[in-house]
Length: 459
Image (cartoon, rainbow, N blue to C red; front, side):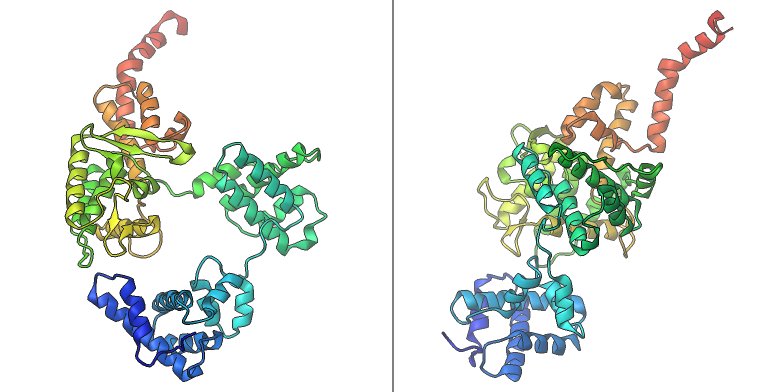
């Protein structure tokens, strides 16, 4: 086992080198962070391996001069570096990895936030994850989820709700002997939003069915009068982008400042084109492969998406022009050309973009275009481009004299919906859509209605 820290500063340089960072400024920043950590480790523990006390000492020293969000990024880098030292035999263990395993399997940031608190032990215990499905109803929930997944359902949303209910029950052992209705009511009282109350009732109904399936007579909880209406009113109304606003988004994306990733502006431009013109979900855009773009047939293959469905979408010439331009720029940028590689390639990380990263970048484009306020979650969303596609397509059918009712199944299939009912959620009423529908009614229905009103049958 080699000693660490190393006086020659070779190990962290080797670690940064194997990351293959393209930017010299990024390499210098990594060197600066890791060198500073090693100096703190020497000051705290000498040549002894880093321990939890070493990590706490370094965090509190850096917290004096760094904003919290910057310190979190530095801590994640140090965590990766320590993992690398362990993997290469330079350390026996990574203290941050041990804390993650015990308290925060999902990431480093919650552990770091806890270590910065006045009483780290109490803060760490507060984030310790509870065992999954360990409440008195936990075995029933686990069995039900297993059954539904064996029938072919992904069941991720309901499984997540059941897990939240299970965690609540673990914190309230005093409710173990209470009936299901009381459990659901107490869980609903834990938060005041209409959506939470509706989720509680829907989850209670799922559990009631599972209990009934096991021969336990139980009455499912009922939703209070007006709750579903309150949930609907509390939801954010989709923002329907106008064609001019979409053009502004495309212009902003093309000029997106990205000196270290020259491919990013045209990638963001193409993503907006696909979201608006093809109505693709954000996850569908991120999962596209090079092989999914067929320039000869002017079509896109969207594979294994929501509802376990795949679909092949014909697209317009303008969409294919945008895709063709992006593919050419992608090739010139040195991204892999094999069909199985991610279509939207992040040059900085040498892999495809994550959905979280794409979401943040597109939100920044919406803000830079002046359509979304800088703070908070207010204003248009990325997913609203899909809503705008559906509404503007319907409006265009009205303008062209096409019966939209006949074409709704085509729109549902294009959007990847299981039924027309799902598509109707996207058809937010706009002033122009209402005007077009009114004119259509006047042409096809008002004449006959006038005859009926003036005829003998109405006397």
